[in-house]
Image: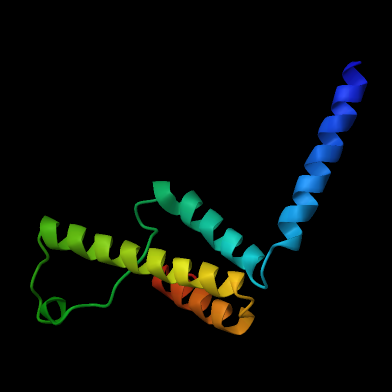
Length: 112
């Protein structure tokens, strides 16, 4: 009886996996890979989204802890919105535009 349950489980899993891959867009795998990269780098304090250098930084002004936190939040929000845009474009089957959005997200993460 146990082997019958295992067979049912394997068949159900296979059907589910084939259904999910059939619904995948042109850059679904790339989106998944980038999300894994983001998840895996969450514990590394030197990894994560970056923003543009401000004029104040170019003038030698030291950042405050609050300004650093705000810059990190803004960079994270930008990556999240860019990744969301890529997902929408992927669902619409617009592969080239999805790849451009992913490229933009990778640049923000400094992972071209």
